[in-house]
Amino acid sequence: MPRSLIATGCILFIAPLLLAAPPQSREQKVRADKQRVEAEGFWIYNDLEKGFEEARKTGKPMLVVLRCLPCEECVKLDDELVEKDPVIRPLLDRFVCVRVVGTNGLDLSLFQYDTDQSFAVFLLNADRTIYGRFGTRSHRTEWVGDVSLKGMAAALQGALDLHAGYPANKASLSGKTGPTPEFSTPEKFPSLRDKFTSTLNYEGNVVQSCIHCHQIGDAQREFYRAQGQPIPETVLFPYPHPKSIGLVLDPHEKATIAEVTPDSPAAKAGFLGGDEIISLNGQPLLSMADVQWVLHRVPAEGGQVAAVVRRKSAEKPLTMSLASGWRRASDIEWRVTSWGLRRMALGGLKLEELTDEERKAASIPNGKMALRVQHVGQYGEHAAAKRAGVQKNDILIGFDGRDDLTREQDIFFHATTKKKLGDQVAIKLMRDGKTQTLKIPMQK
Image (cartoon, one colour):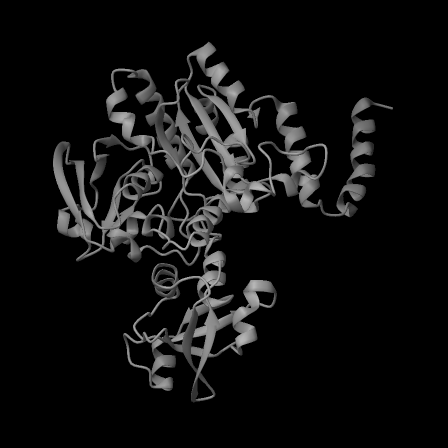
């Protein structure tokens, strides 16, 4: 029989078996990913020191992807950019590429990033100087408007250009590395210390041994909370999205403005649609994530951000002023770690804002609290509100004597900065047209 017919027969025989195969568990997905990536040989798998050694040997810059597994949202971007895109792949060949699938043992003095991302990229060199970051998200599942393959290509090329100019440009890159963190590696945080080690456990249950990115943010907030300290605004509202200050950036470019929101800090500073932001606070930019990094370093009390933009082939300096409390305009309700804040501040409630029509029907004026209980936690500390008597579809109209906390995250801020662990906070709610007051505990 011809070899081609044998091959066809094998495919026809095997295909029904593949179709009938049961879905993989998370444990199987993680192990299969490791086996596949190591077999392909393109990525250095979960071994940063080997990556630094290879970068020193070859003189290439490094690309480090921090990618939680298994995460279907980041799989869509990661697999496509590596395996299919004809522009991205040749650029990746010019880097030493390292894939990190768990943050156990991760050097947090170097790798500081938005831990609510499930796909974060660092572009750096062998002496650990960071050229830039890539990877932005402002919605739980959607990426449109934040990242693109074209934007990734622009960031990669920008990093290669910076690498070609290194070390003459080293001074301009110093701000891309942050200050000393609370703990040097994730597993040293008190809430993670007794649960995880510095390495993944491939001899046992690798999924259970993995510290996910968002757990670092959780541990950081819990660290302050357990000590009875207010959670800093820089921790509550991390990596502000550019649109929170009025900058709508083009995800297909490094840092080009698509439009500017009227009356925003960006508008008042003189930014215009079409401007290419060359630098912020002296730092060259490779992506929207780089803009977020600069904003993340601006104090909660406010300050000035110096910018240089290219407008009609000419460079123009601008200065943007951010007032005290500016971070609170950033949306954090989409973040995975908001579930921890719901436990701390709301006893496990998830809230949503009433529409204008619903407000009118309930006779609640604009500017006053009107938050419907969308979900009531059922277990453990997430069931504290349930035990207090709160029900789904109740409408919160007051919290701790305040009726001006109009967003869920306004309550997060008030509860975690003004109240202490164990405090009993009065919440006023409407149910079937009648009001009542209940008390819920402030928790870790």
